[in-house]
Image (cartoon, rainbow, N blue to C red; front, side, top):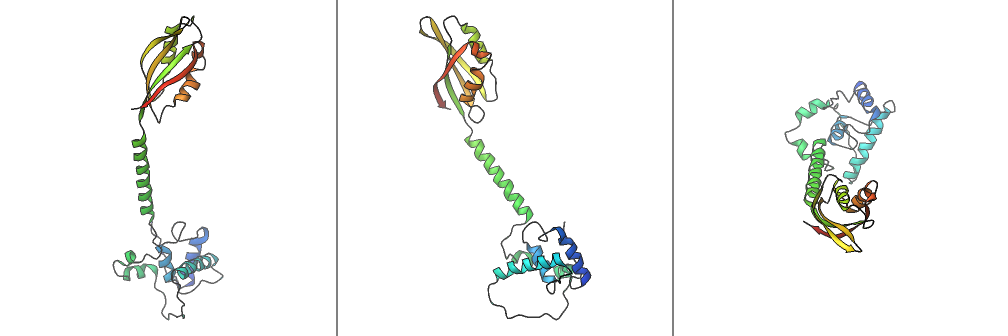
Length: 221
């Protein structure tokens, strides 16, 4: 919302400015903007000590403007009283605001739009990077007495977003022992195979059947 300051060439006008700046460093936001330059132009001279907030703000704006105009000034005095901010705004030719860009500052709307564009760009990049992988897993039982049907049921009972179990078969290992070889498809951003093994397949109650798990193949889809 636009703020209006009137009669900044008078004590009452400076008092309203001083009160406004009691908890602020700048007129708008937390950095110097065109609003500060406009109000600064309407203040005839540096406010006195009776207006500490306005005085501190005036010195801050002065230092920024001095850095932007490094040439040595001879000094001038303006005899006429300063016009109120609103009147000065009405008298300014169309397009002056667009031409006055001492510091190349963005408005709050510009900054918000830039942030939204950046967030959308990151989301789009992440979406492109997110892919799927096909994983072949060896699941080994404790011994030849392990119920392989229950082992497979226990493995497939693990459910999590981005995990899809596929085909499986029992493969002889030796000494009457068989291992379960099972395919699964995962969404890379959602499923970590190491976490799946360590925190799901090798903990109770599944570890009653599963002795160990190994990744046989890991292919991007």
